[in-house]
Image 1 (tube, rainbow, N blue to C red):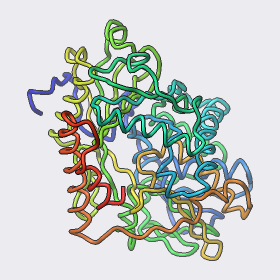
Image 2 (image 1 turned 180 degrees about the vertical axis):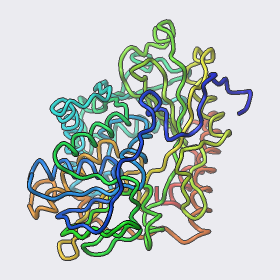
Image 3 (image 1 turned 90 degrees about the vertical axis):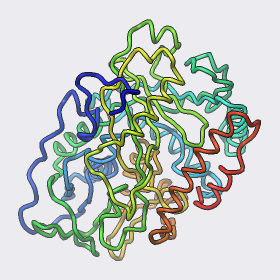
Image 4 (image 1 turned 30 degrees about the vertical axis):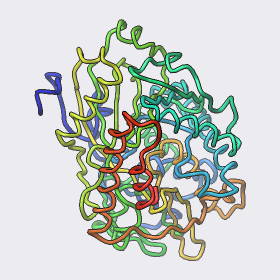
Length: 458
């Protein structure tokens, strides 16, 4: 690793994520051993699959629910994300149409739903609802921030939900010109939530088969090397790993996101920057960042890094490129110069699912029994809970407020074949980086960023 990044003596790159550092990476449980009959087979033991299993068993305890996982529960994005239990939509209000207001309110309510379940089921995941601060560090970013708050009003997001604040009121970010705050966000420790959910669903009678990759999904069947599960419903909950399934390589783009975490920072640091609570922190750059103050007083700091591997390949163990670690450390210390005396203890990466229109979907076909949820574009921690409850209602054939939300049954075209999608994604992020650099001396959003949005449908 470059000498420009101070690394702790125990620095780790990859090994899934820092979130498993204290507990150790779980040893996968038993795999499927032979053919099996079930009422519902769920492919993927991340948040989507686990929440779906949880709500199904709570609603109908007699259901035979099986979860199939290629590694261990929480191996993917559910055990690697930034720990933002946020009310932000996974997609734009405009694309969801008139139902976006209801969807937004359900997202806000889902935060409190997760909190309630964690309390009920004794899931300790360092959860604190401290809200979220977004900062702008250039005039162009400040303009976008003000515009975003103004636009939110037209979608029913009022002053108590989102408002402009003094940029030094909560977290003092160096060079911040403007800031907004919303109460609709909570900090979590991602791996603890995933492992806690896995424990609970097992206690409810759900069988979770780990080390069991699904090689094919057809109506009423999930095929693995160790046997086939036949079920009334087969639910795909594979998010960024969807491209590994036959015929789905272009369905959702596996977008890389990367993180670093510092060594514990002393009380004097937190006093200096004013970060006294558990607020989450984001910004208005095109090549944006996200951060949290962890329960053990570190900064976990993330961003895009190298966004996409050719052919929708995935680096499953989370190794992070040296350039990405340097970029994240450089940005972190721009935000907080006092952090330069610290060091990086862990770096890791994960993949999230991105549909062609950047909006999530939930679907169940009553004829084939096939269903799915995903395409969360980085907002999955909360959205998966709403997806799990919606999938429950769809599987049970119930017409509810959730099944009428605008993301249910949404049809999205596939991504372009290679090399077009590789060229498009890398061009987009190259343009975003250049736009961010130019906006340091510009009063308004760069035309390069608008062009990047146009060519990729962002």
